[in-house]
Image (cartoon, rainbow, N blue to C red; front, top):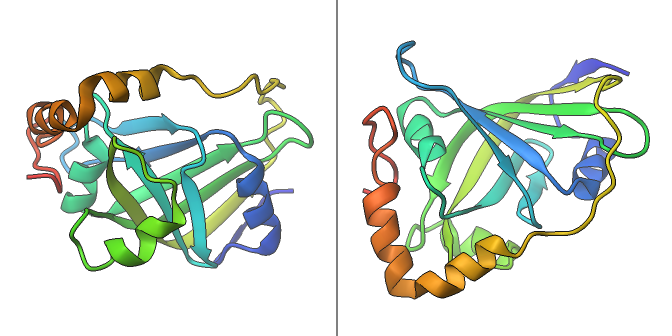
Length: 181
């Protein structure tokens, strides 16, 4: 079941498409700074090619991924099977944030159903793919998407989200700048 590959094969692409949640991990270079691990949901992940992926990143309480990618680019995605056959899939790569107004935005943004709270799209060039057993990951039933983020977004509105990003998303918890500066 386990093993490493140098590209995303069709079976991994199909596995990714079925998952309702994935995780993103990044780390700064300074060992005194904090590693970031974030769960992501909704229909926000795309396989662009056998070595490139992207996800639509929504406004949140922090922007650690952007700060770490600016500093060193290292990123890992993890998908777990919560139903059906057990599997854990990790994608290792180098990533970057693409912002509205960037040249690449016009090419990649149409692949997503953008929301008012879309702050950036993270694109990663993947160089290593790992499948592992996932035997100890418990079984869960998908019950649906939460509506909290949409309600929060609607309440904030465009101006409120812009202010929130300026206050909460420009600097990491360790004082590193993000792509939103």
